Amino acid sequence: MHRNLYILSILACLTVSSLFAQEPGPSSAPTTGGRSTAKPQSGPTEDFTKLAVDRTVLKPWLAGSQLGKLDTPNYTREYVRLMWRHGDPIDVYIVFPHGAKKPRVALYLYSYPSEIDKFQDDGWCTRATSKGIAAVAFISALTGERYRMRPMREWFVSELQESMASTAHDVQLILDYLAARGDLNVDKVGMFGQGSGASIAILAAAADPRITALDLLNPWGDWPDWLKSSPVVPDDERAKYLTPEFLDKAAVVDPVTYLPQLKDRAYRVQQIMDDPENPPMARDKIAAAVPQDRLAQFKDASAHRDAWKVTGISGWIAAHLQPAAQGTAGGATGVLQ
Image (cartoon, rainbow, N blue to C red; front, side, top):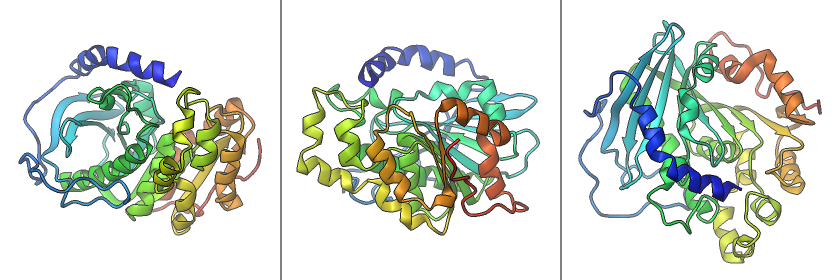
C-alpha cells in the first residue's frame, strides 16, 4: 500500500508544487542568514553510520530561499527551501504564532509516506502554534517530493539506514539554519514525531542536545521484528531486508538502542495498541526500553484522540519548553486507556 502511495505522490508532485505557488510573497532569492551559498564541492561522502552530522561534508549552499509567506490573524507561515545535497532540496514550513517575538521551536516530522502539503492546512497551523511555540515542519528523506530523484527500486525501507541517518543529519542542519535566522529561540527545542518520524526524532536527539523535549507517537523500531512482520514492507521484498547484511546496517539506526541515552531529556512515548504498522513484538520492545512514567499506551486511535483533546498537538511540548513550565521529565500516564 505504501509503495502505491509513493508512486501516486510522484505523479502528484506538479500539482502540489502549484499549490505552493499560491502562497503570497514568493521569492527566488536565497536568504542566507549568514550561511554560505556556494555550491558544494566534490569530496568525502555522507556517513550514514554516524548520527552526528559532519558539517565538513554537508555544507549548506541554499539556506533559506523563501518560496512563500502567508499572514493570518493567528499565525504567519513561511515556506523556505534548504539544500546541502545535490538533487535533494528540503522544503520547510516555519509557522510563527501571532505576535510572538523570538519564540521557542517545535519540529514536526510525520511518518513515511506523509506529504508536505499537510502543513498548509489552516487548522494544523493554528493548533501547532496555539501554545505560543513556533512550528517547523518538513518531511524525511526518500519521502514524498524528496523521492522523485531516486530510482523506483529505492525507497524508504530499502534504503533504511540512509533514510533514517540522513534525516537525523537534516534535523541538525535545520536547527543550525533556524539559529542563524535570529528570530527564533533554539536554546531548547521540542520535536514531535510519528511513526518513522518518531524514530528519527530519537536518533536526532541522541546526536543533538538542543532537542530537549520529544513527543513520540508510535515510533518504529526493533528492526529485526519490525521488518519481519510490518505490513509497510511488501511481502515480495521482505526476505532481502532480513539478511544479516541489511540488519547489520539497520542496527546502526535502531531507536531502541538510543532511547536509554535520552534519560536526561523530557520525552514521552505514546503507543496506540492497534496501530497496524507496528507489529506487537516490535512495539513491546520499544515499550520495554522506556521507563513506565514516560510511556502512555492507548487501546485504539479513538482513546488517543480523547487524550489529545486535553493538550492538543503542541501542549505537551510547550509545557516542557516554556520558561515557566513545571512539567516532569516524562509526563505520560503509563496507563492503557
